[in-house]
Image (cartoon, rainbow, N blue to C red; front, side, top):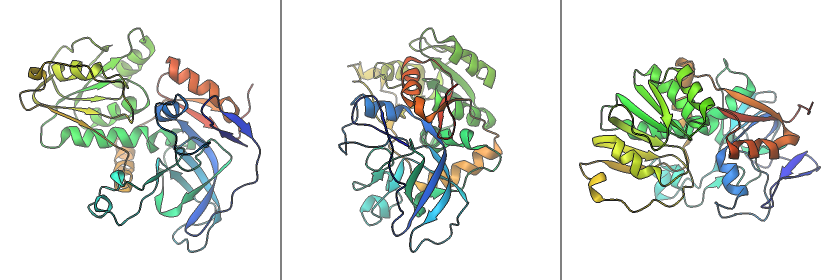
Length: 332
């Protein structure tokens, strides 16, 4: 079974298992995370790249078929496949180690079929071994929410000492990054959707120094802030919350318009930057670190057939942490 997006609610269809081509593997999907990017695709915030596509890019599965020329992978091996599905390898961005910016890049669930299905085809070079300490469902959020948070965090910490870190939008990415930042010795300040007491409670449970509604000033100036909420109005708020020389990093693929603001809120050598996609090296760096820090995702499980419910629950903030689809589960 696969769930196909034709820019409305996902529609179930039955089709033969796809066959891997040269350099590809077929993964029998055991779990696939539900990401806000999937919601942006459904809602039309991201321009469609295909007339219809199977979403899903936080994919955990077992190799059950190998294409010709695949080396270093074996039948029965557990692997993860993430947002980045392929890059050209020859453009200036790829050659300088910034394959996340490749203009010809392909993406699972956007330009290539993703993991809201029983099986998925992936380029073997873009698959990852996963932390052995985590079960399948808990590995899925690491493959996008974890990686984007990690990339944003490294950008925020480069060139400055970060002792106080603000996280705006305490969902899948933020609750994973908070655990890593706390392990690193930083004090984390969690900004949640107004009225979302469950997210605030999770932040406090994880050890955040403070949790409060977005738009409220933190009790102390921040050295850096990372925005995961796709709300442009929060950018000026975050800039006002960081000290001189601090950084505000936007971690989403889509955001509503940023309103006009006084230049003085940016002045003082504050930095405003975005993070785009991820690289394979990010994953190679992040997974061992996440395992060392004992990062543990909080997940809500749904059978694959209830993917539309999971996406609607994400839109409305009905769960904390991350949602995960299980192809082999059934509704009660």
